[in-house]
Image (cartoon, rainbow, N blue to C red; front, side, top):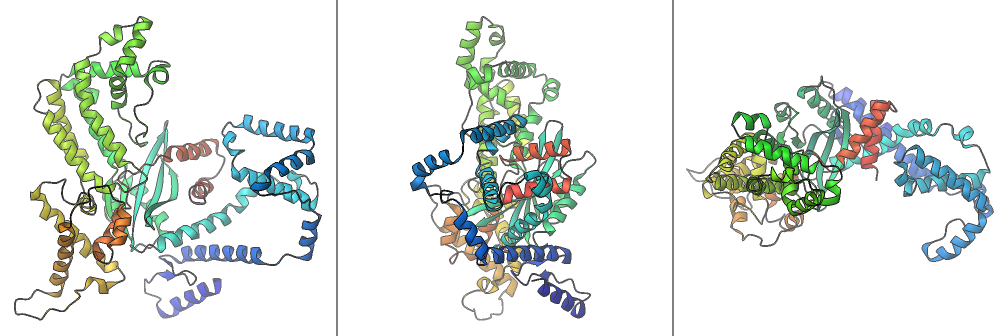
Length: 584
């Protein structure tokens, strides 16, 4: 493999020194923009080949003798559990079992996070490997033979990182849709925060995600710096020509990402900004809405009472909102949901002064406005199915909600007018959202009024014309039969544009789905009939509407803990988190 890379390099130098052609891997065909990335890729292939050769070699006579020497009771299948359990218990003296248990308890007491580690399959495999090594070579000191475990693991970290990296590179490089979704989202843990870079694409009929990098956030880092970091990481995995849709939070400068592809804002962050801008206490005070401020303060006090949330309130819903949803509405909705239990709790405690200060009528009206907003955030953050097609219908639904209640009397009307202004300012709808909505056969153009139909159809045709140059099968985009030339006939480009619009109209004329379809299964079945739209669907519908995922909190907590304790260098920490996310 290295010889192929050297030959490719020499041919490139001799034949096209001034050309900017990509470097191609001779083993898998993946292309790289920089030669150093190709070399790392080749080294990972070489490491994989060495492992395959080592595992496929016949065992030596010495190994056969060792296996005959080993006891026959080592590993039995599930059908012999009773026999192996009795034999295993008699093979290990009780005193040795007590010593092992004592060591395990010491590990657990050192770090309570090890409670789940010592019972995991990877720890059991490690223990079994050490037992097997002792059976082969006799008793030995682990410290003397293997040295420090951390040093041993970090020594082999680059090799394992490259092996997993080449698999992720091959997966992203083999994308038949020639388009991926990329999220760059920050997650705050106390005063610290970090960015997580994740790539999304469709594999089969499911969305597959790959965490490509984690970076601690520095106060001095601006949007351009984050953009350069994202581009540097992506250049190690995909070619710059691949079509990319970025989903970022409000802290990232979207204009820098717009130069490299379409840049969308995280929908949960956008809706959170809508609520925060309206219910900001300074804004409410400037508009003389003191009763709303008092209601929010009372709800925060009730929801924050010691032991009350777990004992009396419970949880509002089974599905929790994404990590980037940090809204003041949670306490208000919690109090509204558990109002009867709260009254009973405080009546027993003889502390009814907080309940008497609660404006029940205003609480009900605000809950009727804010509950649909939080429900929309939960639906948009669903990780098991596509969500980008729901953004525009969500905007339309919330706009109708705020408009219908803006005619009410009193403070609710003022709040709804503020919500309408904040929705238009913070919740931006991109052309990718409009195209994704059409690609849902259950929705198509139904959520939007008729006067917007032609505009959205035009957006679909524009996107088809933009990306079809990168599609390999150009023959699919030509008309099946040639038409005779006429004096007033349009140009070839206009014919292709007309043909793309014709395919869109044919698709829109089909009846709507009544049940919620599996979108990728649907487009797999109609690929031959709607070729262009199917390619768009497999690209755009893989892009999530929300950039933060549920595991982001845990990953950032671990990354920031490593950073604070200075356990690893930033580079090794990034490699370790990459393995954690993509190795299993």
